[in-house]
Length: 344
Image 1 (cartoon, one colour):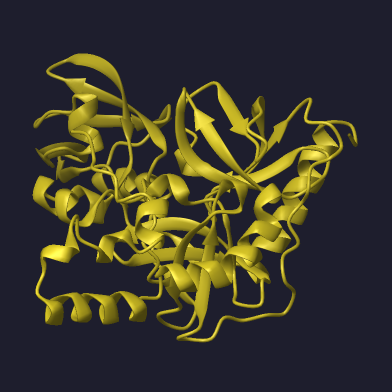
Image 2 (spheres, rainbow, N blue to C red):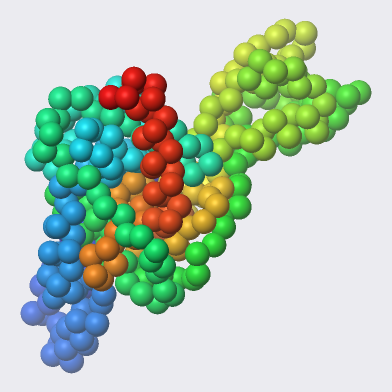
């Protein structure tokens, strides 16, 4: 099923969603009502013109990540020697390429990952020394109700939203998509969720799971415990016994909320990120983003970079990792990557 894409940033943010194809045919009182409603929108043209210079200032630090030929996320340049921070769970295929703000498309490789935070550090080669790394704000905390601006490649403001609640934890919610029972000490599949990673992999009712990623796990509790360490978007190797035949299947873990969605839900609310749970600390805001617009920086109305978008969780529900969490992760990953590269 192809997920619908939300309206583009240019159409939405320039106020076109509040205009009609030919509003001159509307009665005068309705034209006035629509005009007032448009002027009160956070994303009307006047508001965008005010915040555009703030976004453009960091535009050179924002890139587009292309995986297996498809744009999958944004990325944020964190060093002048080619290291870029992005959303790990969207890097599902090879090759990985990076489109810079000047439209150059360069190959990249994964240099370090942090599964818990869903972050990946990738590196591009041949970009020269003119890369502009982002500067995250220090010791700043977004206040509930304050405005945030999500920045796209070339410095386009792709969304304007407000902080919804205080920074919070989003509990882990990854699922394989099976109902397990214990039959004589053996984890046995009683049911398979429709459209789950298990169903896509070919798991069937009656299968016995005997190993997870080549580790012998036989009881129901042992299998469940092993799967709890997997995040949405990650693949797991299942070794199963099916009527005496041993099979190896590769299944993808999915977020339980996504598994429960109907086709109509997706049409109405738009697509959500592959991984939208299991975060230690997030800034929750109501910016309307597309999944491939995560990975880019978030700024406040003073232009300070206070975080990085990490997930689109709902129609008007997005998560950003705060700078206080991102900066230590970046420092750690850079040290790891440069250590492996011999200090380069």
